[in-house]
Length: 344
Image (cartoon, rainbow, N blue to C red; front, side):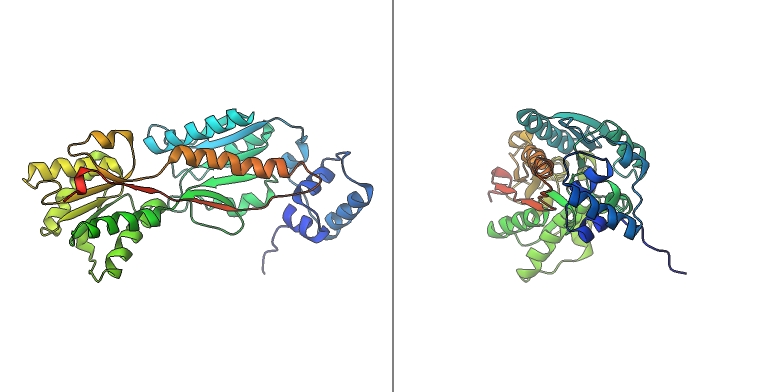
């Protein structure tokens, strides 16, 4: 027997020809709904058999001017830079933040976090946890009933979600193309952990750029790291064993590039004369590596600001007589910074 799909607030809004915010106002018996619209929505709710969750019914939609932010891994550079951008833009826009940090990037038990934010009457949520493996699977079952604007960061594109993300694929292409333009031809890659969507995208950009240039890419041409400098050093050792003729390395972040430069120096391989090295991130310390590191700069502060801007479009739109700005993806392009580590 096929299990019947649960009716969501989006189904009601679609059938009634109104926004989800209007349906929410009817459910919460708000006075700012025309009587004709109220009756129409009520009829659709009865006809479809929609049953809002107890939490959704209990929330009184008064303006709290508060944004919920869910993050993880604040000890790392990327998440902390992104959070700074979120905080700066929220303060500038007159909104407070309610921050929740997951115990790990791959936590799947998110119900208590979401319910806690809803109970505090946040007006929207920024999900600032990168996509790793299936750690976003929860959203397909829970999201339809959230009845709240939510913006995701750093995940694959989806037509029904608002997402703000860096173009990691373009960044991988930029890195490989720059090395090719400098005359390097045997370009190895130190990947990030390959269950991370970002790492997969950077690897794909590197691989496809080399293939378009007529250069073969084999499994021995890459080694996996975990974003740390130590893992970059270990991966560089593996790369030199697997691909001894390499003349350049694209490391998927600047910290792993630092580990690679250290190993190359120990092995008597000069950077950039013998092996060019380029990283990804654009951390401020990269300019002070020896030699200074070429990198693909992703502005994570701007990423955080963009998430707030996009969320506020949806929040403020929802307070204008049923207008809903809808889901939208915002793609930020990284920039190539050329320094001595690739100046052959």
